[in-house]
Length: 77
Image: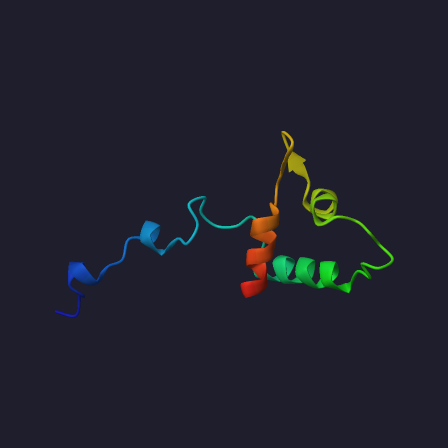
């Protein structure tokens, strides 16, 4: 028949790159955030990345919703 062998089927769960599933932020939102941070004149605006991330994305229980490491990983997009 024209059905594929079961061995070729990749379970949905195996396709996920993150342990937490899909990001809550789209690629567009992530790229926009990177561009926004990069456009700041850091000689004039001395806002720390952690503070900026908290203002932009918020924090829950004292933890940034978007940690610095996550933000930096978005540059690879």
